[in-house]
Image (tube, rainbow, N blue to C red):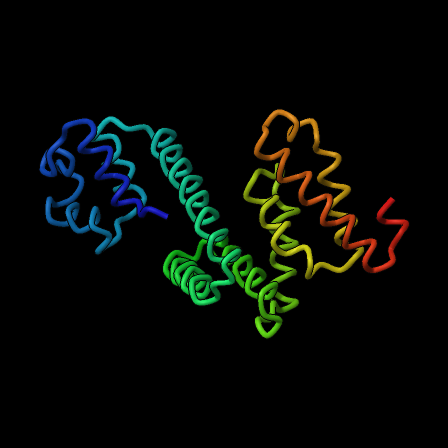
Length: 214
């Protein structure tokens, strides 16, 4: 995700403030410049002062980061499909390695989840790409800690369901169907849900779990 310094620079320039003005008495101009380039960190109290100097609320700043994060996830998902459907394992490995580097740099859990999702797609192409039980448990925890599943979460499920135990497939399918009041309002999500549920149904039939399929 875009670092805080880069986001700060976006707001500073948007509001027409120079480095010197934004730094004021809170920090040196050179320190602020390095912060914007992601070369150093600053304390939380100093960061709040800097936001005040350029007249940006914490709420607006956080909303900007969240919007960027969502568009970043959308770009990640868009790049998966052409590589998967062309059976391009090299391309998928490059995406996975990139997400792993993001995770190692930022520590943000979503990047770790992304690497697991890509590994799941690689597994569909070549079973030599293994997804560990620990990784699946991490995905389980992520999903059921989320209050609301959106297109990202439904896509995550759709790309990994073939690795889920049948009891968990049933649980996830039931959870999705209980949230239809939300999905029905968004065409993209609704289509993903229909596709996921059909996959669950076929999976249950293939494994002779007729009760779950019903």
